Image (cartoon, rainbow, N blue to C red; front, side):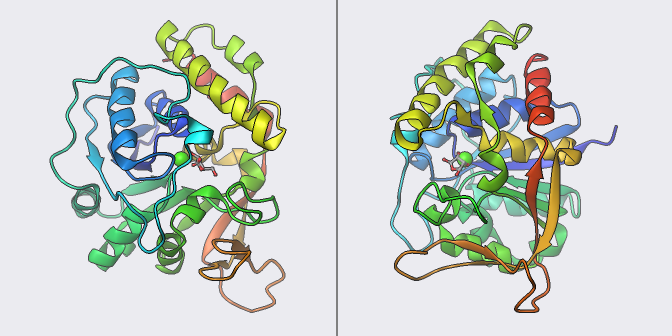
Length: 311
Ligand code: BDR
Ligand code: CA
């Protein structure tokens, strides 16, 4: 089994929390850092959630670093109607005694990339501000990052932030634009596949061997997320976006990737933050992303439940 060094850049966030649990349950992953960004709630609340989650997941050896508190250009937006006032739905975790890493997330990203050249995969499951800032401050990291896997964007599926934009890109479209154009080996996991992965109460019932506090956390967090999906989107269950991006690190066979040239709309009245791909190669641009356009839903759910059952 080859071990992958991963930095997860995240805004926990209910589905971010599930992704962190999945990483913790995966022996193929050596988690090097959790770098926190604004997004589902403020960066301070997201960081406090990350500190509680490393205790829940027994990952206290992993540094948690506070990152960007605001997007590069646009105003801060948070999604407490989706993730709850604290960001983790109805879940209440014990107060954490773990301390934040003493430096900024961007410093930690740059430090680790130089320490392990060509070895680190960035798993980005929140707005892209931290990686965009790191890229701007030290462009030499671009060829040294093995791969970027990002849950973001939507191609044909309706937007969940505006009619045409996905939440992570909507929160900081300028940061996403920097990363798309930087020249990374970039894999994008958009709503087109994540909104097929609807997590239901029946999935929780199959988590029979996980520690009781893990199951209780998942129950309490996802109950809120399911209520949101029902009330705002008329969807039964909840889309577990971020865990799918984490899962494909270990199980790339769960999705089918297409090589696409992707652009991010930075202006415009109705389509701001829309991600577009040149499906018919009408523009003749070289591909800059691999985009997951098909998913084995049952295979993913089975994998997720099996892994959580080992926690
Ligand atoms: C993405 O936005 C956030 O609300 C979720 O955590 C996920 O990363 C889905 O659009
Ligand atoms: Ca997220």
